[in-house]
Amino acid sequence: MCGAYSVRMRTRLDENMESLVGQLAHMCVASETAMSDATLALLDVDLAAAEQAIGCSDELARASTEWELAAFSLLALQSPVAYDLRFVVGGLRIVADIQRMGSLGVHVAKIARLRHPDHVVPTEVRGLFTRMGAVADRQAARCVETLRTLDTELAEQLLHGDEAMDQLHAELLATARSDEWKYGVQAAVDITLLGRFYERFCDHTVEIGRRIIWIQTGTAPS
Amino acid sequence: MCGAYSVRMRTRLDENMESLVGQLAHMCVASETAMSDATLALLDVDLAAAEQAIGCSDELARASTEWELAAFSLLALQSPVAYDLRFVVGGLRIVADIQRMGSLGVHVAKIARLRHPDHVVPTEVRGLFTRMGAVADRQAARCVETLRTLDTELAEQLLHGDEAMDQLHAELLATARSDEWKYGVQAAVDITLLGRFYERFCDHTVEIGRRIIWIQTGTAPS
Image (cartoon, rainbow over the protein chains, first blue to last red):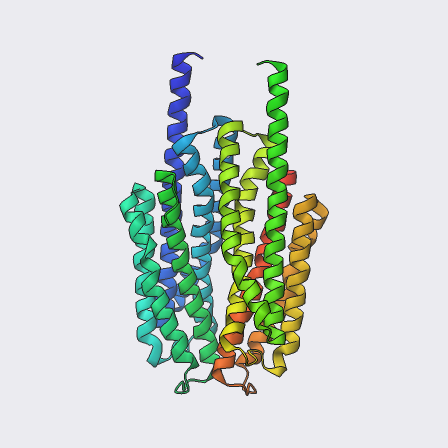
């Protein structure tokens, strides 16, 4: 194979890889924003924020399909190996996680919109949702940074980010299930679903952390 | 390239592909069984069935990791193209869907175990859960058959299988949220979570149908 040709191919692979990395981070920003808008919609009864979050769904689906097609072309035409191949294979799962994070933000926003102009979240569990929103924001921001830098230390931090969320989620369910719950069944059903959406959002950020570590090291974290 | 060598490589690729197809169907049987055991645990207050469902989790995680490693090796060493490449790329998402279906079965079984020997499902919504369980069973069985045969007609049938589930799920939430609900908040929280698990289980079967169609035709269903 001609050396110049090989270098040109390598350069194109590098450019395509860089573009795939950039697009993942970009999509993750969209999912992060969807969930933070949804939290705003929920806690501040902000209909515009709910619509904003809901509006991101189609765009994320389109971006996800485009990413997959680009990854498929790269595999078909450039047969990446080692690190590059791990990135494309790992990325196929990461892109699904990111899209799902956005969908979970949309689910939260839809409940806020459905109940508007009423509050979905009773005063007693408002603090819990504020903290769940903050943990989701923090994890999503870390995810974006990890995808931008592909830094394993940041990815490691993602792995434990669901512990705080799991604790808040358990507390939320215990509150809704307790005999002292005084906000009725509808509110209990709503916050059960909402709590689940936040918890799953966080699970996906952990999965992304695990994938980044695998991409970088070739070994799945224990 | 020597012709005999090329034929040997092709044969090995075919064998590896066949093994990957077989493993997906095999894993899907495990997820199908987990959910049907979980439904049994739920409706018949059957602790052994709950334990059976919960026990599948580690095995499914291990099988999923093995599948991914085998797919990665195939991409790295045999650079499949066209249909074969679509199968491996699509399979990387399908394997995640199958694993998640198993996890949702485990979630259902864990709620049944937590409340044992009490019934989780109040009499009024028992019929709904029986039907949700039946839809989940039917979709999972179709999924197994679709993965065994890679038949696009079966895959098409999977695409609409979530409509019955969505309807049952909406009915369930409406019942729990209504003023007539008389089984208390704890039961409402439990059935809200359970309903969500069945609904998501079905969503994954639809996703698998979409992926199979893409693998076979190169075009995503609209």
